[in-house]
Structures are given as structure tokens and as C-alpha cells.
Image 1 (tube, rainbow, N blue to C red):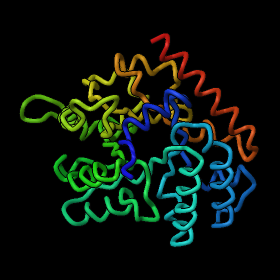
Image 2: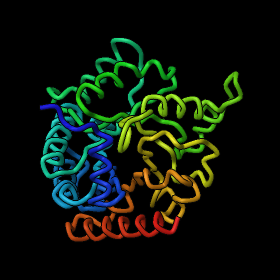
Image 3: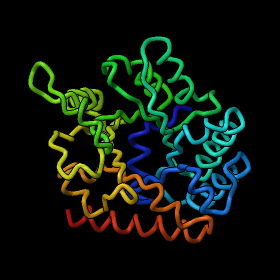
Length: 279
């Protein structure tokens, strides 16, 4: 049976569990602060604890693939199990892989994360469009077939991103706006929410862009990078109801205690709800 499109599933998850994405980012420093070794055993214990604590209550979990890949095949095996268990517990899994290439290579990336027969199949994946939005077509098509989502880098939270993203196209639009307009075209007419999302940093202050893409807006930068839920209305304006704020260290530093992780996530959900309501 074909599953409901990602945008509809995400809308339901945010409405019932709150607007929050928690990253699973097993930095060496976090493993150490949890009293774990920077090895596969530590990675597995860290990941299992986060999934146990949060997968049955937050809308989205976002494993950062790089922190698993650095341990080779054994680390990827931990990631595969985490994806499976998180989805089984009801969380949507957004694989933070930021893949971007052309042709058959992009098709292979799409098969890795968006094909239901893949051990790394996720509800959505992050991709980079700066080889041209058309280079993403294999991922967009694969997502449409499997009912998955794609989050496209648009205005990222790192300061260096402006060098490319704020550059001006021939028609006067920023390159980020060109990408956002492509996303809006992909989502046109879809209800309740399109499945092609944008990554827009919560640290921007003012996005200076039209964010009305009829799709979700993943907002990294909450917590350790300096943004707070109260900043969201100023950055996202009328689109704030479609924002998925992403927090990693702001929650993870409260481990390894399961109750600490849950309480931290609940606080962020409450703060986001209050900010969105006020905005």
C-alpha cells in the first residue's frame, strides 16, 4: 500500500507532537560528555539512548550521516538500525546527508535514502542544489514514488553560505530565491503541505527571501548556534507555521539520562509553540 506523502505525514506529526526536529549528532565531544568512548560501542549506546528517549514523542529525528560514516561499515550499521527503530516508534526520520551530484550518481544517492527496499530508507533526506536545481530530479522523482520528502539547502545557518546563496542570478534574484521558487513550483497545489522542503537557518535574523513555498522549512541553528525559538517569527514571518526548528546539542547535552533528554525536548516544543502562537 502506498504511504501518505511526506508533507501530509509531517503536517500531522507537527500538529500532534509539536514543531521540533532533534538531531542525532554523535560528536566525539558529546560521546565523551556522556562518559562514552569515541568508538562504535559508544556510538551505538549514544544512538540507542536518543532513539529510546525521543522517537515516540518528537515529530522528527535527524541523524547526521557523517558522524556514523566516520566509523566505517560498523557505524553505518548502527545508523541503519537507528533509522528502523526510530520509524517503528513513530518518529519521521530525516537523513542529514546533504547529497548533491548529477545523473546516475544522484540517482544512486536517491536509491540509498528514498527507495523503500534500502536499509537506509528514510522519510526524507537533505540535498544540495548548487549543481543546479535540475540535478536533483532523480531525488525528487524517487521521493514522489515512495512518498518521501526532500529538504533542499537554500539559506543555511553557516556564514560562508552567503557567498553562494546571496549571489545574484541574471534576473536579479538571489540564487537562494531561485532555488526557493523551484521548490514552490514543485509543491504548487499540494495540500496540506508539499513534500519538498527548504533548509533556512534560524540564525539569519531576516531571511530576505520569499519563503512561501507551500512546503516545510527546516530551521537549523536553534540552541548551540545561538538562535532561540523566539527568533522564528522574525526570520520566517507568515511561513512560521510550516517551520521545523532543528535542535541537536541543545537537547543532546542533557543525556545520557533519558528523562533529561525528554524534558529538554519538551521545553523546546513548548517554547516553539509559544513563539509561533505569538508570531
